[in-house]
Image (cartoon, rainbow over all chains, first blue to last red; front, top):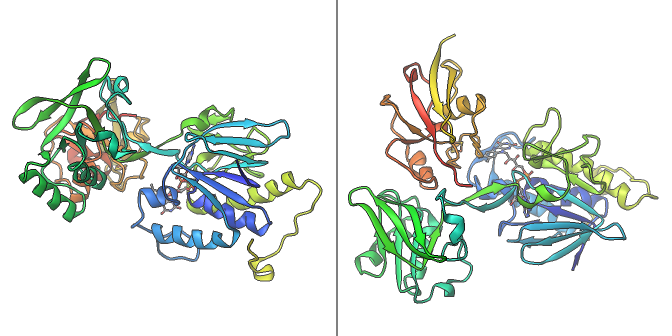
Length: 334
Length: 107
Ligand SMILES: Cc1cc2nc3c(=O)[nH]c(=O)nc-3n(C[C@H](O)[C@H](O)[C@H](O)COP(=O)(O)OP(=O)(O)OC[C@H]3O[C@@H](n4cnc5c(N)ncnc54)[C@H](O)[C@@H]3O)c2cc1C
Ligand code: FES
């Protein structure tokens, strides 16, 4: 079990800055994120875009801001559980919170700070009527272990890097790999596109461009995908697996079931300290809502700062917070 | 104030008539969202999420999609020749009478 002072759900900018502010108050933090990397929306959606409204930084690339936040947090040695989604939250008799991830990792802390942004980044699921019937019965939205596909027939859909990279990788593993993509061009890296085209020529994979998967059929298990080809019309392709790779989209997910006061996919908080309706649980950054709320990075930073003061008092009810400027106190890490 | 009327069909097939000003530098995504249609627009209109995917049902003359728009449409579903990202279409006076349909968004 992982124990910490403040358990932060979400390693976006708000969660990362919380580590720093908590550290100044000698509180330790651990972060959980379903993404394999820290940075939230900045890392996942727009790492190469410049941001112009971070105070004191006329322009900063989102990816560079994340790097800076990681460096700023480093002296306070945050722990990370990455690539796992916080699934359940319970309260123990001693008043601590236990948060368990989808992979079974258990975390314990007296305070939970939900910095979940727009929600947990999850694979996008194609709107095919019966797709849910075939989940884990031939349809998967990510590749966990490529060995699952050894000597099997696989259809991958998508035109980005992960679709191409996996198509190339599985060429040597699966018995048959077909990549279905809606147009002739790909947005993926040029060398993977060239490599895939070469494999297609050699007959090691099949590229079906100007085509889209429009239906699935099977009997308890996936047996074939229906493909609509711009020129050839409808094609039915027998397969063991269908793997749609269309990127990730944030979804509120399990947090909705934690007994919190939720309005329009956001958690209602008291702007005094960004506490939720459950004592000991705070919500900061894009995930919270209050009159006048703005979903901006700098607002998340402010919310994190005030929240840490309140968390300190709740963890140390008998101590007074001594407020010091960092220019006076310096940064004393753990 | 100059404005255009656009008909929008939501994912339940219900038609909405929306009125959008042409002089406010609005895009179609903002006009749809502003009229209460269910458009997530996760990226805020930067052609980085494809949640504003729509079909254009009338033969209005629209600017060709940019490479960024084409690239992002790759992560949308059931893309057709008349597919566009709403956020990449600026509301212009010649859009009057246009009919658009929200594309299915998976979940
Ligand atoms: C294209 C774009 C441009 C933007 N430009 C600007 C700008 O110029 N200026 C500005 O101030 N803001 C901008 N924003 C908004 C800004 O990115 C957000 O305000 C900011 O990311 C919010 O940070 P956050 O840490 O609260 O949440 P997020 O960045 O969303 O991070 C939340 C993290 O929590 C994780 N998470 C959620 N639930 C769970 C769970 N149950 N288990 C595990 N992990 C979970 C998610 O996977 C995610 O990584 C922009 C946003 C986009 C998309
Ligand atoms: S709003 Fe994100 S692509 Fe249009």
